[in-house]
Image 1 (cartoon, rainbow, N blue to C red):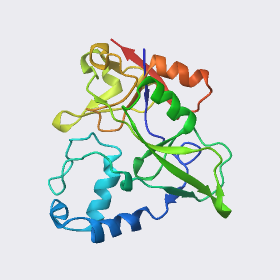
Image 2: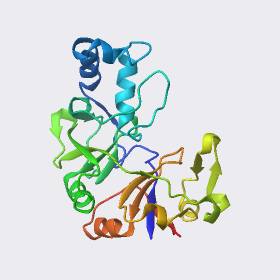
Image 3: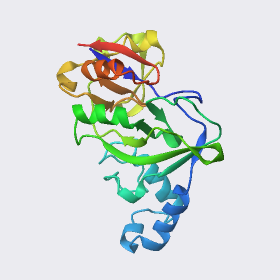
Length: 234
């Protein structure tokens, strides 16, 4: 069996309302003051804003892929490129074990990070981030920005319910984000094999997948995820 999760669609425990602190300013300063001229030349317009956008997209795109001719292919995330602080607009008593922050960047609490690393040590990338609520109250659980390090092409259009997905341009597909539709998506077990956490490469709207083994562990330990649904393994 395999499980699929779309990104949260509304603000709340799985998508806290807030903003990164100091990240924009740091990346600007790094580009302007520390980056070598030959590295800056890789960005066709030579602007810090293009570099900032490129960095944020590293967290949600496959290394080696290229989104625009104006910027280089996505490389490994450097330690200085990760956001380190996120301030919320309101107080939260119970954030999810997996949350989405701004720019569609994911973060997980320490317990979920440990579970993922037990199953796929070294496969995914984690960077500590402090979540701070109003009046400078630090959220008690430790969180880590997570960049999923595994992109697979296991979606099987032929064995999926035609009402569950749509054909897009350039070989991409999109899926309908509902329980009924996602349960009609089929993924080839020959393609995802022994993977436990991955992003589907051909989906234009992000589809994050979990193996049944990983999901069982997550649920047994009471971890809270955004809405997720069982899909077909064929």
